[in-house]
Amino acid sequence: MFSEELKTLRKLGFRHLLLQTLNFASVLASGLMIYKGLGLITNTESPIVVVLSGSMEPAFHRGDILFLVNPPNARYEIGDITVYKIPGQDIPIVHRILETHDVVKVVNGVREAKPRPENQLILTKGDNNYLDDVELYQGLDWLERKHIVGKVRGFLPYVGYVTIAMNDFPQLKCALLGGLGLLALVQRE
Image 1 (spheres, rainbow, N blue to C red):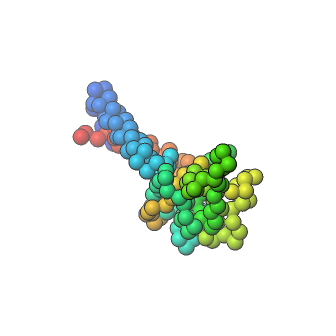
Image 2: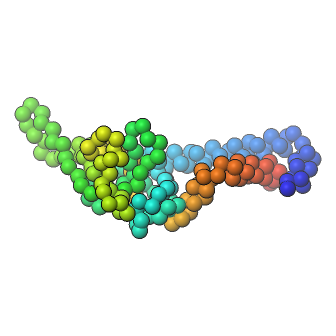
Image 3: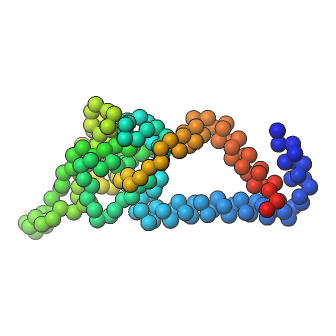
């Protein structure tokens, strides 16, 4: 399958192989820096996520890529589609805000004049689900602002199926990454 590429690889020599390896590492590092830079700009740990279930259909389908923002001083409103993560769970959940409430702080007997965004409590529900998400919160009655990863600002339909396929079939991921690595080493540019 890769016999011609392996023959070419043997002919190239150590210096060329080292140069191609460094170029490949540079591309990977650049991609990671772009992702982390997007995270800083959007104020979220995950600026891009893939929809893994059908709980938000028809708004979003399995395999859609979502672009997130998390404005620090803005309040979340009913109807906003958010991505949240419960402590102890690895997979974030994409659902719509159903209700919001504010915890009003009283300092020295004086109530806050304006509720702060960080004191907002949130209840969510998937568009395709019958019940709200209280059962998913693992003992919490409401989501707090610290559980919210971000708010959906845009999406690309079905592009994330590649990610889902690689997670469902680890052999495909190994073959794809191995093939890309080998092609990066063999390229003469």
